[in-house]
Amino acid sequence: MKHHKIVFIGSGNITSAIVSGIVENGYPSQKITVCAPSEGHRGVLAKKWGVISSADNAAAIRQGDVIIFSVKPQKIRELCQDLCDAKIDFSNKLILSVVTGISISRFCELLNTKLNLIRMMPNTPVRVHEGMTALFAAEEVNEADRHFTTELMCSVGKVCWLKNEADINKVIAVSASAPAYFFLFMEAIEREALLLGFSQERARLLVQQTARGVCALVEKSSALSLSELRQQVTSKGGTTEAAIEFFNKKQLFTIVSSAMKAAIAQAEFLEKNTF
Ligand SMILES: NC(=O)C1=CN([C@@H]2O[C@H](COP(=O)(O)OP(=O)(O)OC[C@H]3O[C@@H](n4cnc5c(N)ncnc54)[C@H](OP(=O)(O)O)[C@@H]3O)[C@@H](O)[C@H]2O)C=CC1
Ligand SMILES: O=C(O)[C@@H]1CCC=N1
Image 1: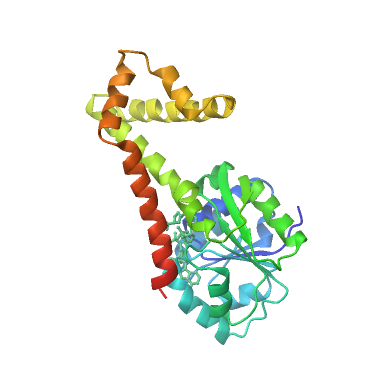
Image 2 (image 1 turned 180 degrees about the vertical axis):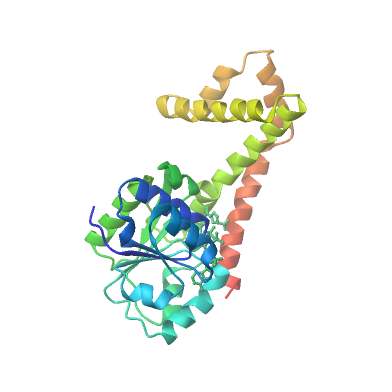
């Protein structure tokens, strides 16, 4: 992979996960700059990974080849206004954005220029090189930039390219927000294990190793559907059946469906209303 100078605008959770993942995989830390108004998050990244840290977005962007926007959508308008005031020339830069709810056309409008922009929707497991990242590019983005972005995110997990920008909001519900659903489910099992009298350490191990085993089994069993794998655990008249029946009675599928629709609706709300 080419080692372009990468500048992250925003140094929070997802930046931290991507930086950790790519540096651990050999991306040179001195080719990475992380920006944020306060020292807190970016200082931690500079100390831990040896990346450059800056409070000056405009100066950092000017010397960068690849600019990754990674701030909350509510911050983007003010940020773009500042960058417009600084009269930055974006023409020879690859712009990557993980920002929810900001379309390519909206970004160009806010920065008052055409942008060579790829939207990325990663998830936090990029931190451990097990991420899932969806990508969507504006038509004019060239092959070399698409290739670089694919390689960068493949170094920290799997990548898929989307044909429609609208699918970014769907991907948020399916894979970008989804780690939190799994954590919530694990939290619920862990809490019950604690109530059953297991120590914190034991409860965590039981939940963690089960989740790890489940993922490994799913990966190794591509010929079986998820439903078939579930049935292999579920003996007729057995314990699992009792638990699954309860989930079904409480309409788990409907709950999950409504939760994912709520995530998509929020992405659409941010798209239409925050700015
Ligand atoms: N977290 C996730 O799993 C995922 C998040 N995303 C998207 O990524 C984006 C960032 O999310 P996340 O990392 O969780 O958010 P965080 O709140 O953790 O981080 C936001 C970062 O933006 C910085 N910031 C705020 N204003 C500015 C500014 N004007 N210039 C530069 N930096 C600024 C903050 O600075 P400071 O450190 O000083 O507070 C902070 O470092 C969001 O749009 C989110 O939707 C996408 C996929 C997954
Ligand atoms: O919660 C959020 O808005 C972001 C987008 C996907 C994951 N976290």
